[in-house]
Image (cartoon, rainbow, N blue to C red; front, side):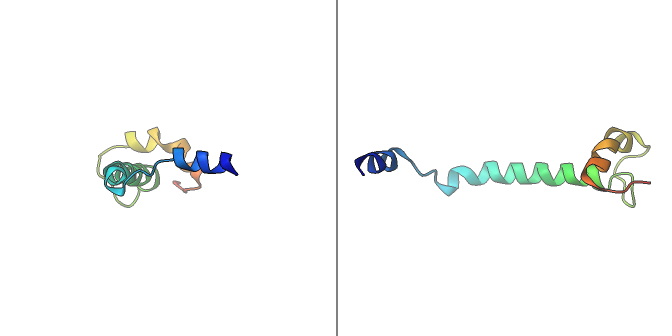
Length: 68
């Protein structure tokens, strides 16, 4: 039982204020990536042409998004 208590005493808790900025950036980057993979060059397009569509084409099929 002393082994368990020594392991628990070595664990430290990371405060939410330290995690929140990183989680926010990771969430925004994830949303941007999902947008480009799922709908860019579809019904809504930020960029002209088909370059973005061709760049993420295989990722669309891998993730199950229809594109044609």
